[in-house]
Amino acid sequence: MLLIATRNKHKVEEIKRFVPLEVKILSLDDLDVKLEAPEDGNNFVENAIKKAIFYGNMTKQRTIADDSGLLIDSLDGFPGVHSARFMKDSSYEQRMIFILEMLKSKQDRTARFVCAAAYYDPVEKVVLCCEGAVDGKISHGIRGTGGFGYDPIFIPNGYETTFGEMGEEKHKLSHRYKAFNALFEKLSAIIFFK
Image (cartoon, rainbow, N blue to C red; front, side):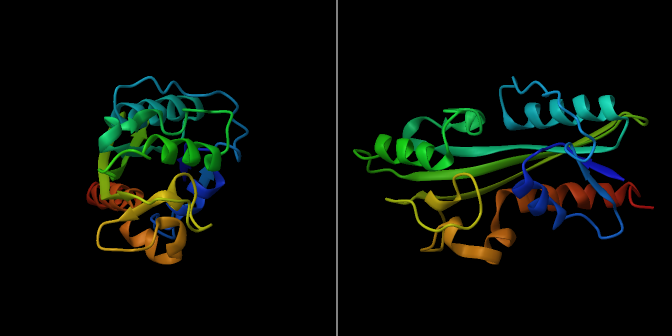
């Protein structure tokens, strides 16, 4: 049994793709957990580990958590670790419009998605964390309805389409795929799934 420390249904579905089939998955909603973990770290790794430990200790379940975000070079890495929390009461469409407006006068549109994926075992007190990143650029408009979050404005290097336009192909390129793939490789090495 493994707890995915999120209430985001899109994220649960995406992470399930990386979990070996024999492992039963729970989400925070499945356990009716209402408390919010602190996300006051200075980077994605700190936040992912904090979340995994917080919910692992609370539920006594082996837990995986992630923290991820979009970093835009010409905006000094904004929104960065605040990606999910900036303009919190606004839709992602409104946030993307805001970002595109900020970039109107910028020539440099390079950006990257970064994800830190953490694992915590509350019995063994084992903590593991892996990072994944994908480089690209910000499009000039919102394109596509697939994915979630900022996917419709992010074009990965080597492609003309945004993550929001890609469909299945996105899952083999994404920062989340890279982070969780690395994490589950490490977990397999410590015989986690036996």
